[in-house]
Image (spheres, rainbow, N blue to C red):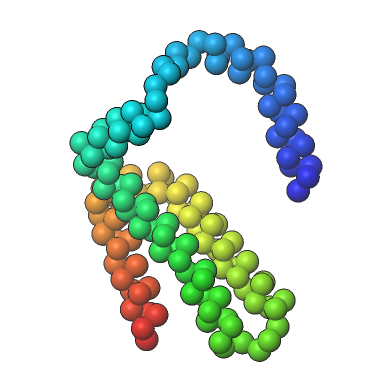
Length: 137
């Protein structure tokens, strides 16, 4: 793990000269943060398709992120007192969610090119509803 961070640090150090010249070309306007936030929110509210996609992403992210605490509660009430197994199962759930999101993101640009984001959002909503129904069953 430490070697990965060391490789990234060395890579950035090697790219420092190229990044410095690029940063000098950027024109950054100094504005108060509240003005930038206001401008960004107003432009986001005016662009309905992007707002819809952003809200759908937040819904999916919150739903999948909310699975972990529910799963922890399930493990506490339904498994013997073995913290090693519980920790492993929680890690596997988180890894499965992350890997599935990466695979889905990479395959969607290849396989789902003719499907609109509205249809994809509808499918995601159906699966979230089925997931919710599964918790009641």
